[in-house]
Image (cartoon, rainbow, N blue to C red; front, side, top):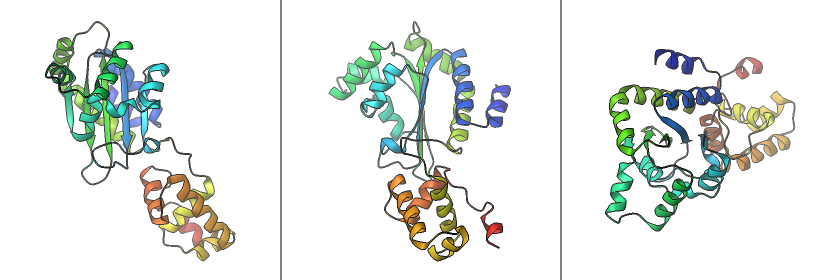
Length: 255
């Protein structure tokens, strides 16, 4: 596990971390993974799809339905992970089914999962009490493994599995990532960084060699790309998503 942790800490990209994590989880009997993260959670869900980072090694055909058609919103374990921290066995879904507690939407998702051989697993919810961030990962048991066997694997390796999954979540959640929204342009990022450093539109126009109206245009387009109402909200959202980086070389360039 130490070599895995070192590799995750040294990784330079989200994809590098995710590829290594999928390989490592396979060793424990979890052959399919799906991870979701948002910095803009609303209520007890994961917020707007366009603000979500989703990583998975599930086949495209499944993801087109589960994510593309928004079925994940009715997935029992996604709902659980949106409201709870820590690990949970998928046994709770079977228990709820036996008690007749599942909604029609939840039953539909379970039927979809079964069509793709997704029957057993564990989910983990991750939260940040100081922000609107929320993350979750679903670990799917290898075909042929019963939920009893998955639960046994978890009990025997819970400490290692929680450390590895938590580390992956913490690393990914602090790295630049792409969502369903179009990324900011270089100009949009630069004007937001100058705003974050307290510069006025007139200041930014002089620094960047633009007209004030052009600066305002870049700010407006940045707000539209980020789907926010104010420039302050745009600075916050772009910073959280690591699309802009504050206190970089701008201060020196302005002197």
